[in-house]
Image (tube, rainbow, N blue to C red; front, side, top):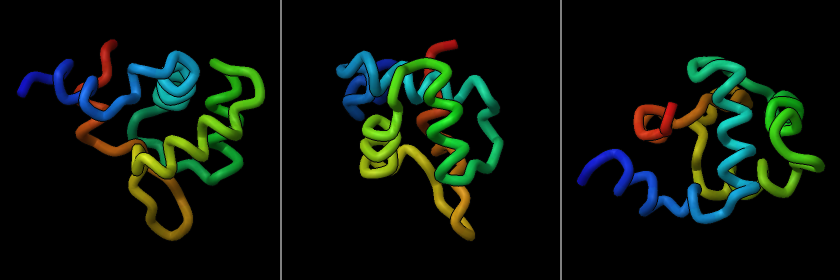
Length: 82
């Protein structure tokens, strides 16, 4: 399975707002550790009122969580178009 196929299978690219929100977060740094509030701020650079999209991304496990901080999931990061 190629990168675009894997990314398509996640469904992230099917929803424009969700895709833009995740892209906005990645633009702040793919190895950054974000608080929940930081995710909203980063996604907010790409979409208005990002809270729903961030909650969906968390539900889809688009982040690894450690000590209450969120890091973009490495496989998704590798598959994300530049």
